[in-house]
Image (cartoon, rainbow over all chains, first blue to last red; front, top):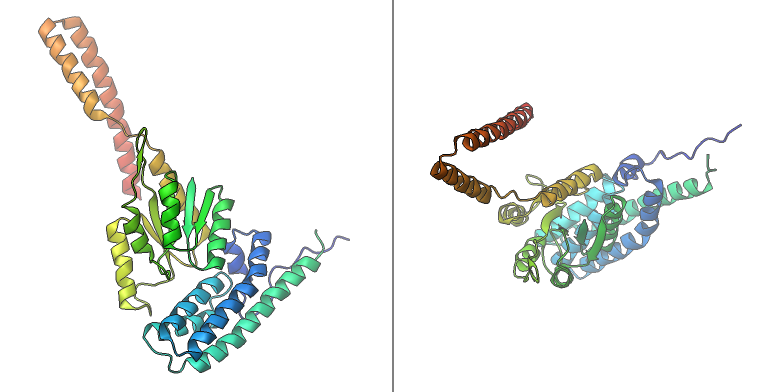
Length: 130
Length: 194
């Protein structure tokens, strides 16, 4: 009996596999490549956000949040994206007031997003080739 | 086509480079406006610049303005300047700041070919670049010289009072004009249906 093909859809909260695949022209290998690169990029950008927030620098906060928003937009349009967008707006409006709590929630949601993308990647690698 | 991707965020830059390579384009990349200008100065064969709007060193609109100062003189004449396409995550009417929305308006006015909103749908990106390819591939038809030559021929025929050649010439001109009329009315009816 033939094994079932790798499942590309996963029941996740943040990682929108279907939309991400569409953005990669349906190319699973291309998406896997972008998933592999996501963690290091996102963690660097998250650190930049935290540094800007700690330094109370709205301009840096806005720019760092903008960069993060762009990076994760291929994978999600839900909570992590919305939080990055909120931080960007906050920074661009010239304040860091209230940013700490948003940064903390963003970090947790990014952790979840990365977990989901890595699960998808692991599942893909372990799935037998049909 | 040769496309230069300009984005100061490495991850999104890589994504767009890979996407364009998948579409079969020859892709260069720059991590900011200054680096993009250097590339454009030394490589006059870039067909399209796909640039992000908001970048730390120079925004996409400034990049476009600065690129206009680059000399495009070649041995054989002027090199065609690249078409500029803007990428942005801004949304007019959304939560974006007014000054950023203003940049979008300026971009459209000063000569950007198109504005694509991130995350960009691959099909839309492909279609936009295909349109540029089509527009750049079109040969300019020199109708002025042609009409001038026809005018000279008509003058000669009048001067020589050559009836047979005049009739043959008018018949062939009428035939070509009828073909052109048929073709233009077809194009007009297709455009009207759109």
